[in-house]
Length: 292
Image 1 (cartoon, rainbow, N blue to C red):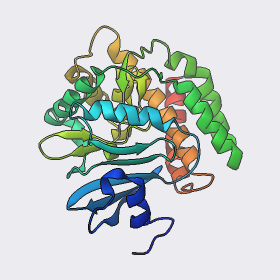
Image 2 (image 1 turned 30 degrees about the vertical axis):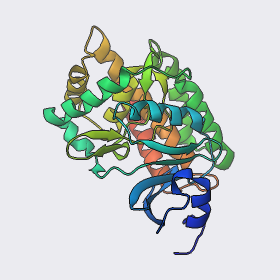
Image 3 (image 1 turned 45 degrees about the vertical axis):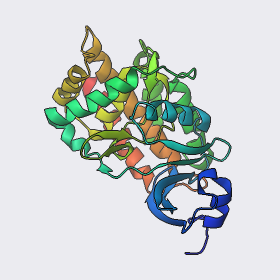
Image 4 (image 1 turned 180 degrees about the vertical axis):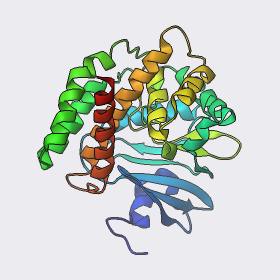
């Protein structure tokens, strides 16, 4: 297959990746086209790897932070081994791990909650990086990018007003004291059958452990009962933690709406994502109407 913007040249990559220099029969095949990155299965000298490359420009964290977090998690078996990482280009190579996307709907079942809770408990015991999760700054960066390319209609304006009014309360009590993934969705959890493996540490930082639970609860649209059960499974059901988790789930919804909107515009954007962002916006507006 010839090289193109969507398919890197094997010879060029072999020169950039020390592990592939001199490898025989190097082949590259697309395996996933994510919202922020493109991924490829690379076979070199009989070994298999995953190559991840940025798919678009736009607001985002420092790749060096995510790569360091990935290495920390990989050292204890929670993520694929890092073979090569270049923060300057965002290029990441890891060992290939066979498996399927984790089915978030299964979190309604106790056995699957226990599996994910074990992985999160181990992740949150790891030393946190110096960079702290600042959700309000993340939201503003994503919103500024969206505003750069799109008009804001009445519905979005109402949602932003509502978000800004409640945001200070939503982030109250955050404790950024552990390594958090901060993009915990089914696509970033690989189920090998024997274990769960975490992928894509792009947004990882020192954060509040409940934010990871909030993101997966938001992504999976877990019922309140299943959300509370996940909290118990993770051993974090202390006084006031249930209320805090439900509050952070709302924050996760807001952050996800900002992210989908920002990813729908600009160079390399995916216009179809605006509908996903708007669906979250409307859900948040309905909740506010019903609660107030």
